[in-house]
Length: 557
Image (cartoon, rainbow, N blue to C red; front, side, top):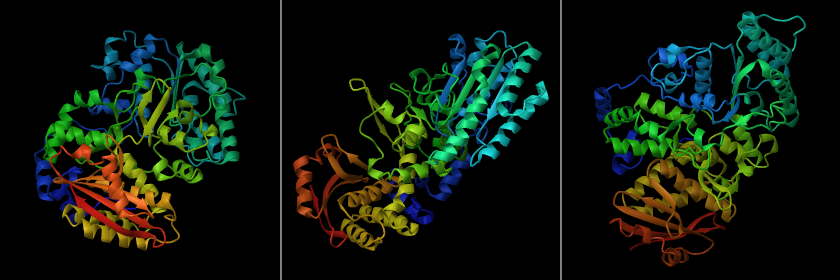
């Protein structure tokens, strides 16, 4: 489904509204001129996940080596870290590899350069499982064997070592014996082979056993190991995958490591301030305006009770490089395992954001989940919005506009017309009509659209009616500011325009008058009375027999 207005239509809406998307702030000619005048501050590592390539190529690097200092000072040896896809896990793993290989020259000017004096060169075994997707048992075994070959070329292969676990065991022992230094094992994206079969019980069991056997030597190899670092998206049960590694330290939800991956707000406003200034210059806006837009679109990730604000690094780097704020992370692809999870658990678009959950509800192994919530959180589609110490519970929600709009785009065809141009056209036309003050015509257009939705789809009861409106108004959030919650009550939707605010209340088999009365009784307009804008209340009624809007009333305060 296409969400955003494109071409001349997007330019037209954006120039009028001047609210949300920077790509619409300026005409094409002006944007081109701004880009030509914009200064180049840094080389941005788009698609580069190798620490040595970033440092040797003089690309922008945000120093995360203070976390390695922390590990060493605390003598931590077995670490597990869960973070969403494309969030910097592989880069951090690569940084660890370079450090333990003793590549001192790469760390000049970084935090660890002041700490480390010895720079001992350890043998490092770095296994990247990200390429082991959509594999059956035979293919997975072959992949693991190929991962081991380069290290056998370095350290040799023992007689009788046939299976991956036997070969891993032999490699570690020989590496230690030959170098005299303990071995470092880094496992990146450990869960990649398992995620695509997480809903297929038999296949999951088979692949899980293979991975369990592969990791099984690590516990008994403790005398030969200096450090183990394991990353992934999900937290599969340690009993099922790392049955022997009962000393594995899961730092995924520790406050002090909340910004170990991603870009913190502090890092963005200090080390990356010149980059934000340059982006603002390219877009023709101030530094403060640019920072706020970046916050709205890419910020909002929290991984612990008192987490720092974390920005999505994948999208942020691409925005700086392309000098355009857009939906980079979500458009890079929604994993198939997540789509399957949403389908399996019949996720309703309104219910995705939970009011209050305990950590046991969302930070659990995929094998044990009874809803899509754990995968939505661990995959980065939901994040911690608030921690409530009294009940030891969390409020989860979408981290930012990029993710919210992207999720709604993915789920919208279940409720709206499957023809993308219809959905796109409705959103754009409705916004334009409202902006022009033609609210009556906007409602006429919405009525016609609802009447056209196929009987095959949902919208058969009050809940589905609410969902349709929820989707339509939130999809408008890509063009204008739309909110649902007010300080003293909850209106169904509030549309913010440059000179006016529209408060919508919806009824099902009631009347438009009832809807208007509720706006007054609940005081939904009060929070906006000091804005100096014209205030409109819109009461809408949906008739279940007609399967569309039957009447509406619009009143200006």
